[in-house]
Picture (tube, rainbow, N blue to C red):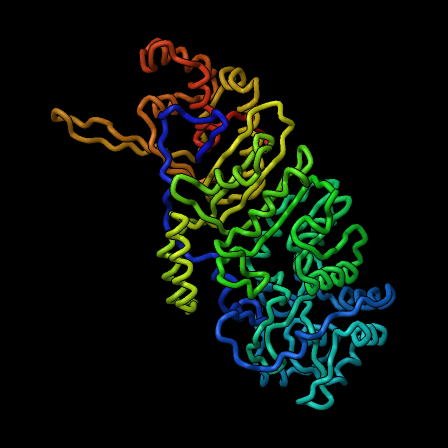
Length: 551
């Protein structure tokens, strides 16, 4: 945990930012996910199979056509819960399209069977099977350009797009396999699926509290805006490419959502002049020599998109408003990611609080090892990455949530960094920033000195003893916390003693006075510095103040 905005602990704690290296987060979408999703998304070495559906666009027909289509999905039970039961999987993303011989052995007997074959399995279906569906919904499918006749199998048809249900909404997206199950080359403007793990993680982490105006930048299928429409008065979804904007608008109408607008343009350009109290984005973050794949490539250093989003906040985020984003970025020598976010905010950066919560941390060498050995990345691209990371002195790649909040200017800005632990949820990031803001306010020191801190239940104190003069002597102290944030931090001995005495009875002032009388603190100790130590202990999760941290 790292805090600033006058939140440092005056040398009483030392943070080691290094953490264990684990699987590359981009592997969730860079390699085939067919074993989980049943819809093959493979960006490496595709077979040269024709893909006529990638030249097709859904049509935006009449309200009556969309109503008929929506009824067909609803009445058949085409939703996540029912499909899991019907397909005998505990999670829909673990469903895998059965082989052709097994599919052919099970006839299409009802509307749900037909919809699964068309819009989940993405395979050829005999046109006679459409008779199981309501006549008006079949007419709508043809009219809205959802269906095409198969040139290889006369009398059969297939869906131009897939429509999996995700978190209670239907999300049409591009298909990535042929009706025969072959991998296909994907165009640069392909609409990335909302069923894959990192997209679901992003949407699930967004707050569901009411807001006035929500902006989803890089909307893709529109899944974040579709979700946001449940609790926002109005949502806007922007994307630089026309194809995903059309898909997002189709999904809006398919789900019968009225308070959402899909619009094409770069970042904030299509909503220039508007301001928002919530902005969300799950931007591309893979460094790339060429921006060939819109949903994947994040510019030369992988940070071009998120940098543009942050730079636009002074003009677009209202006081009290928040930006939420899940992506990968870099810590650089002398410039950790949270400090570069603050720099991107420009001359008005003091109006913004910044929080970064690292989910995973990787050394560039470990990241590259996986790219080469597992994902079979092109070595010229790997060489480009290594040269770029060396030039900008990248030390770690961090897969993280960021939260940027605009405050009212009545207190110093807060910057905080944490590592996600067990049971972390994005609401913990909000709570951390709320606490840091309260502690940084004009009444923060008085609040801390009047508080009654208590030792947190999950805190661990590790003490290293060495033999000195024939006896063990405690020489190193480390506190560890595991939820909601993961911390392993070296502390001074007097801080360990202070923490052990946090009983929920003695006030911060009493703890301070006790250390003054014991001569533990320097001459003429500053109560503000002592309050900052208490502040850090609470932020790290080692101690708690229930009266201020409830809920």
